[in-house]
Image 1: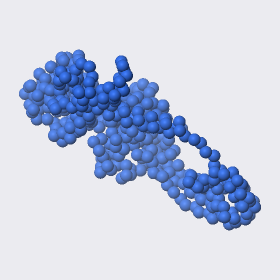
Image 2: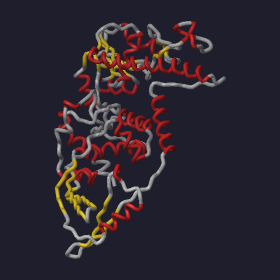
Image 3: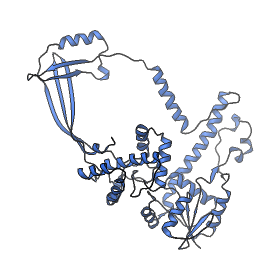
Image 4: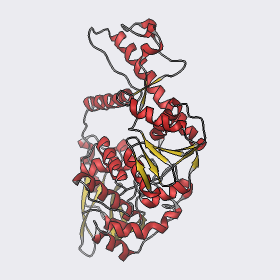
Length: 436
């Protein structure tokens, strides 16, 4: 009776089999040298059924009497075209002494795998393969540190709750609004995420349409020191104290004109730490700003980079790294040097800083921040651009603090306060690692 490993896609099954050693291959599974059977899904193989499957009263024309639609017991059906795959997995599970779930290490991956196990009525021992990177070393580590399947029960319940909420909001909300609108031949889709997002867009659009510009005035003073050095200062009040009348601005200008007063000067050194490695939200934000990628495109490319083993798991909201990842820095830098040699050289010239505020186990969630691995393969142009962005952010996180001198100057000219400030960078530190 074998152990069965269930992955989310065939490429992951092949990667795991390559580490374990391949004895034989068939259409729906791979047998490893130790007898383990490795099989795979193709993403979601099961989906929630339509309303009419629950009750004939929920079928046909939409009516108020049907609402709300809240199933007592949720039902699933096999996704069209996936029947053979599900039957093959079910046959393997009947022979299993243990199952290792190796779908993607996240909420959706947990849902994909657990729904298959539930559908096939598997009730035996379960362990969880959990990897943040699919490099050979990452796979070996995950195989050697399998987690109890029950440790991810909360993740499975959260995934089902999300899926059920989407169904209820979408089905009930869409029908309710469409019935209320009563537009013949048309309907109005609602969604748990799409509708609040649409509301944000509408509110923002309305704010832009309703915006009325208003003029205000600031004073600029041209001054000369006793030694003859010319410079400028400004009277620019905060928003709630802005000068809105031209006559008031002219009065203050006459009041200050020709004044002689001492300058108050303060000089303070300052520093700025580098940013943390990327999470998915911060990567999507910068990829849009720098590369023009949409959030969906960034996730798609980040997933491809992960599957090609050149970056870590992308669906993470964590920006921190594990403390034991300090030991991998040299290997990762050797790989990044292949695409950004001058940046790596600059980092080494500065001196690497492994901050406790970056490598912090107490701040980790299920996955660490998105970083490059120690592997590199040929990438498509868009993939390479995103890889470069991730790599540079990793280098910056290891860079020295940016240091500067902050000078502030102020003067009271007959009751009118003028100010000026300047920051001079004394050592660029991590900013020298930014892409030009």
